[in-house]
Image (cartoon, rainbow, N blue to C red; front, side, top):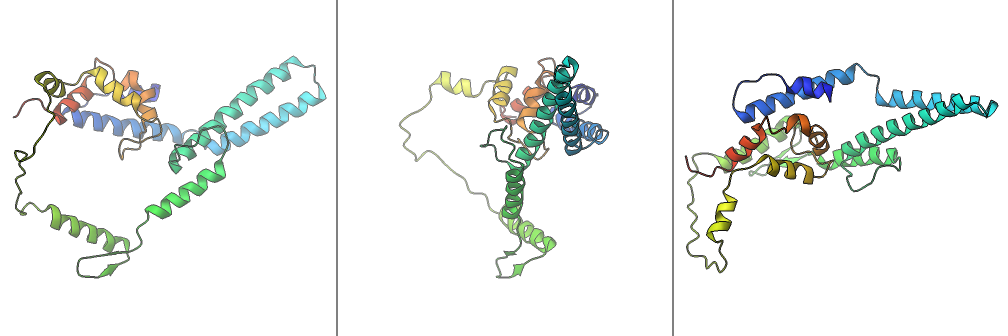
Length: 239
């Protein structure tokens, strides 16, 4: 949390959304640099298991040694902690949120990641003229041209009216006002903590568990940028 707090508490000038996005980028960079200074998780786990085996071997030769017994407990706890971290990392990459941790399904997670990457890979696409494209650049251009033709600003706008609908149930004034009220820090906090911990809310790579763990830093009421962002996305008054 110290790395996150140092990166988050930097001053950023701009709109609330710009400040939050910029700070998240700085946090991500700080975590990446912090992670580079540590050995890979697989190497840490391998070293911890080797230490545990060595301690257990010495304990078998001297079973009454209390210091060796304490070392064994400490090594077991470290191995379990690192194994859970490794499994959690693989679980997030595989997006298998339905599988509980603790079963050491490393092979399954690796296989799930390969299947997910293969399923999401687009190897071929076609345009409206019947042409097929196979290279990544041609596929990307085909998608851009397709959605540009649909979402082009020169397309005529269609007015939608709800007057012809016979709505039987309507909100009363109190209910309508409650939908338009300003967001509060409690509202934002409830949304964050009701999310699945392994779900990523966006392409920034931070899952909900990160925001839950770092909420005292990121979501403090003294820094209500998240609340102002929610209010700007759902304005209560027309500008």
